[in-house]
Each structure stands twice: as C-alpha cells, then as structure tokens.
Image 1 (cartoon, rainbow, N blue to C red):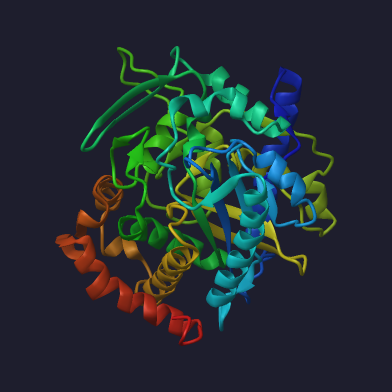
Image 2: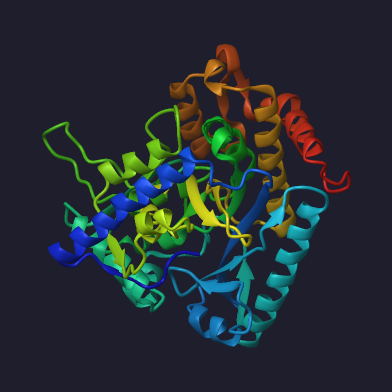
Length: 434
C-alpha cells in the first residue's frame, strides 16, 4: 500500500543522499537480476480494492474515511486513501492455481461486508465505481485530504512542480468539461481495482509487452466511469482525469516538454525491467524521500536481500498504467510483479474478479502463444488502441494483429476470451472458477 513514512525532498543535502540510495538500489536490483536471486518457481496473484464512501441519503461523498478506519484498526488489510471519502483494502497474495479466483472473490466480499457494516453505523454506504458520479469540485478541496504526512508531502511536492497557476481538466465527450483546480486532489476522483501478477525475471519483458497490448481491450470491456462533475465524458474518464490531475506542465511557445508523471509508456520494453526504472529516474524529479538506514549494496555484499526502499518510494510517484513492482516474498526471496492499474473499481466484486480472471487468463494464454508480441502489432497501434478504449469503451474499434480492424466486442468474444480460458486452464484453475 506504499511507504507511509515519507517527507518532502526539502534540501539539497537530503535530496543528494536519497538519490545516492536510489542509484545504489538500481545497481543492487541489476545485480540480483544478473545473478538469479529472484523467485521463479511460484506465480502468485493479488489485488488492491479502492472504494468510495457515500452518504446514505443522497449518495454524495461521505468524508469519514479516517473515522471508519479507526473502527477497523484490528483489520490489517484495511487502509486509507488520498481523500477522506476513499478507503482501500489489500487482498491476500495467493498462488495462481486452483480456486484462487473464487477465494479472492470470497475474501473481497468479506472485507466489503465488514466495512459496509461499520460505514452504515456512521450513516454511510460503500460504492464501487471508477469515478463517483455525485462528486463535485468542492469535494476535492484540501480539507478533504486524508490527514497523513505522506499525502500532505505528496500534494506539496506536486504543487512545487506546477509551472502554471492551476491544474486544468479538459475533457470532451457527449458533454464538455473545462475546469481549473488549485490542488492535485483531482486525482482522488479515481478508484481502481488493481490486480497484481507475479512474473519471472526471464519472462518480464515478454509479459510486460503483452500487458501493454491487452490494456485496451481489457479497459474497453471493464469501463464504467463516464461521468465527472455531472458531465458525460469518456467511457473511462479515469484515464484522462488521472493524467491531467497530476500534470504540472503548461502550454508554451516551445515544443520541448517535460513528460507527464501519469503515462502509458514511451515504447516497447526491449531487454529488461531495468529500462523502466532507469527511464523513470532519468525523466522524473524525486518528489518524496524517506529515512533509509539500509545500504542496498552492502546488503548484496552480505548476501542479504535489500528492501530497495528508495526505488520503491520513487516508483510510487510515477504512475504507469501497467506498473512494475519489486517485492520480497514470505520465503525471503525477491520477486517481480506487473500491477494492472487499468481496471476501474466495481460495479460489483463479481465484475471485478471476472475482469481480473480475463486479464490474468489472457496474459497467460498470450504468453503461451506469442514469445514476442511485438512481431504481431506495432507500438503505435497499441498506444492508439489504449486511447480509443478510454474514449469509446465497448464501442471501440481497434487495429489488431496483422493490421486487422476489429470492434472491441468481436475481438474479445472471438479471440481473447478463448485465449483467456486457455491461459486459466494452463494454470490449472478450477473449472467452476473459469
């Protein structure tokens, strides 16, 4: 759920120290990859569930997240989110086989039951949706920021990067939305169901490129966020809203431009996960820092697995729709994951687990069929498909393998669902779960 004990990178000395740790973390990660330290015999899945709290009477945001969380203190899986009207839960990582999907569904249902019971005692309900339709601009004032040092530091750090005078949201769908806001808390409009798939270092490049390719059809079929501030916009407005909410750039006379912190990526992955981390360190200024007592290079010399704390904190401030993740399993071995941030929250737990099953199955099935997806489709088409899916959802027309033009529904029904089924069968997923 992210490192909570972070602060602003406030002076040159502390910034220099943090960047030094960041560079050491990259070197340590590279060493572990080259010397095969990573877990590769077990594949796990996991998920994070974000949700909205709403008033029982009129379904407007209920700003009682910290108060609800206080009542749930005995549950380690419950946590707060950026805005006071959001909560988040962490689902248990499980081995990707057998009844893992129905177990994920049952666990999520149990979490929801416990949270809903507590919320109702406080006059609120829980809604699972990508963007809460009843949100208004005044709900996103800094008064509604969850009072945690991490969130205050993140908001201040992003504000310091802002070139213009305000954050601008410009979106056109059936209606048009043009709005300026004084804080990056616009980000809090978005709630997701983030699914994690553990991958081996050897297959990371192949799997990451497949994740990028699948992002468009996955989003097209799962889209449920068409309304922002009462305006009918994109089928999945989260995509544009998230990028613009954290976009500190402004228009000017020259073409040279900084990269947005929220992005789909700049091209295919070629040789290693390291390309992503090195690009993000090169492109994006350090926003947050944290106290680091561990020297990752020293840990490597002592044959101990480092936590790579600096790298994880920096990675948490760069928002790729398919995000690479480093972690340490319970057995003490490091592992790699791909975090799918494309899927919106809701509308029900069953929808979410079906979406997760589709993505996880398609990832596995595609990997069994295609050793290098780049031979089948161009990066430009994958990137273009992603934009179309966000705008048009289920009505999208994609450019697919062999330059074929195909509608989202036909692609999913005739090609991707059979591949997803094959993938789940390869993982020996229970037939009823499939």
